[in-house]
Length: 300
Image: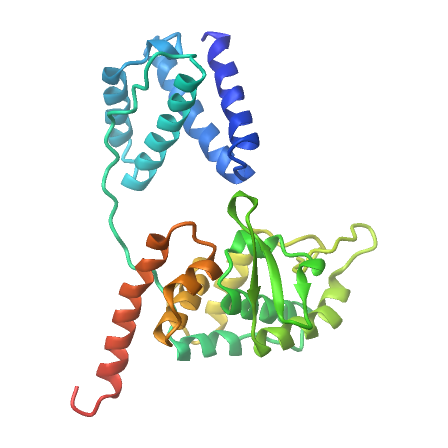
């Protein structure tokens, strides 16, 4: 394939890093989707990025559906390639964007899953605070529920980001956007206890660091590690089913709205760029209120 093709991807990655300030995780997704399309170009004997037309795009989409990709995955690939070619048009590296006319498949709108208060209590009670890892896990669960931060954001929290006097944490969100989130007394007490006890025991002289949450080897917890911890707690509690890390974030937003918080405040706390991202929780809240009504009203 023409070396110019790979060079165009390198330039696009630099654009995402410098101008768009995207996270490395997001950039890797773009690279994966674009490289996958480059493989398709090789299969179709398309040597230059400027040779791709709308007919080629339709063939590519057909192949994706034949491989039974989920609609969400197809939508992401189209979006990645559309952005890539939009950049190439801007840089005058191609004349037109062949993905401009490609329609993104409609996604199924699923309501976010969340915990009811009694379920959450069972999850917290499953923490064994007598052990070092139990102290860490209790602090982790309390902070995730108290702030609604993303798991990726939680992994990046350092001791200097915590203000224990004001009970606030500085969160580094998507696109390096920062926001302060308050947390309550339960999270405060669990974090303070963990820092004074469990965390000191997890630290190693060989690899000292100032990350808040550490694994058993003294290294920073990863999103995969947090997922493992949450699933382990589900197994230890009396709850059924599986948990995904975002459930605590969904629960945070749902409980705030159900108890009267305004949507703009919840949007700020969640770090959503658009209010439409937060509005999905109003549907969850309506369902939450209905179930509470049916469970507690004498003549429901």
